[in-house]
Length: 97
Image (cartoon, rainbow, N blue to C red; front, side):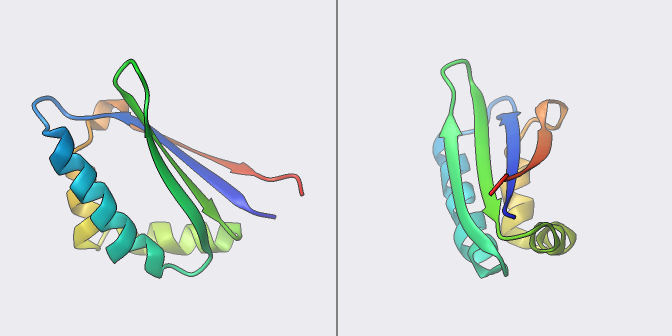
């Protein structure tokens, strides 16, 4: 059973969107693509300024392992520095197949 991790947020005030997109790609390539069980990751922007990142993991243990090690990773730290902390919401969903 796969796990969908859904992160929603807004960018912090005065953040350069191009800088954020660069940091997002770096986090994806330098950290996330190296994690066991990562199946897919997509970033999207809503019309009202909200952002969404959907990460698909092979299992809950894979998602948990990544969450445990991500706090120490420089690319993830840089990615998070672009987010408005008061708007961050993370949810997990388990596929039914």
